[in-house]
Length: 335
Image (tube, rainbow, N blue to C red; front, side, top):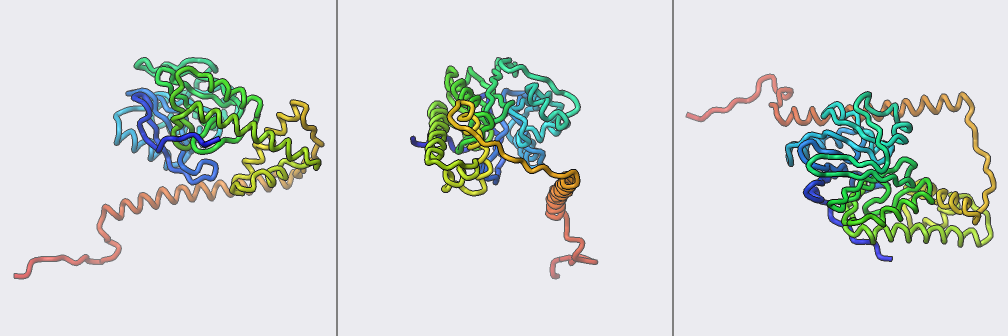
């Protein structure tokens, strides 16, 4: 099946939807992560991006340069940090009200702002203002708490990581995921998919069909491989089925294969021999915790230095080079 045609990056999606596209270099989403603005005046955002200055810079810059708007509401597609990391800043900067599912709240409650949190029921409707209404659709599969938001009047579906632009996504529960794909495939008036990562999808039905086809094809590949007779780990399956894929994506591929295997096991088509997990000692667990804390402290310090370096570079551009001179040269006309 041919890969569906996708749009080149643009800011304006429909009169009520704009995209703030933040460049990204991750192998998981190598083009950009997108934060969507819905409505006018007091706008609503779909997701917030990571806890990083580059997301804040893009949002501030877009609002200042493109439209005079404030962020009144921010909704969340799921709990992964590249979608919720910047919520505290949105709350502090704009006093935005945060809406998310109860499952998302229970998963990352300690990482959320201390105020302004509202729990959304799936299948609810959010009134943005100006007649703009977002439907909340429960679409588990990528994660247990994944939801999509649908602006039916304009045919715009915001999918978070349930569907991505330019690539497939990772899956935790394949049975739920296939049901979610079938659900969004049946939406009335669907014209464009706005994914959390990558370009807009202008042929949504073809894209969803492609996603379904890929999962069915991968399931058959796993079955064919196991039919050769050898018992295999999920990683061994990845090594055989993902030879053309960058090895930097193999851990993600392993999670997808495990999702397929769980479904096949549930369907009674595959059986598993129980593995033997390696249990860390108390000392090993504590050392691993300390090492991770040290690593995160270094990363945080590096981010702080980047911000300070950028401010320093701007200061030097705007001020004279006083450090080079005890007395700077002066110039005057020759008589």
